Image 1 (cartoon, helix red, strand yellow):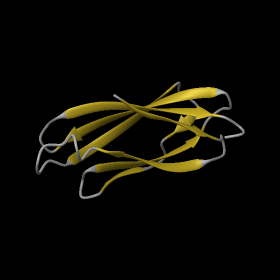
Image 2 (tube, rainbow, N blue to C red; image 1 turned 45 degrees about the vertical axis):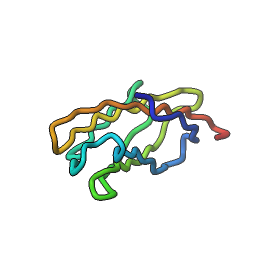
Image 3 (tube, helix red, strand yellow; image 1 turned 90 degrees about the vertical axis):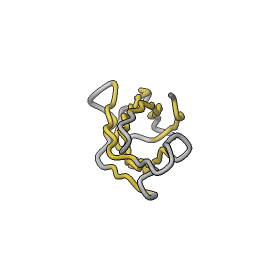
Length: 96
């Protein structure tokens, strides 16, 4: 599922969150979230964590090349064994 589209400047490093609390079963938490970026060689996800009592994925997005849109795919695995894939689009623009 596409979670959103954001615009950022190449030099910016920003924190974003993906809230899974309305998707998780009662008592279930995120156990891991893996991030991948396409196209490669531009935007990176240099750090991430699971916050909000295990219900929210928090991650930083850094870099990128002007005039390129990047897709960050989040693959979340839960304590209940569920796996969910989501995407966030980042449009990198010098005048963001």
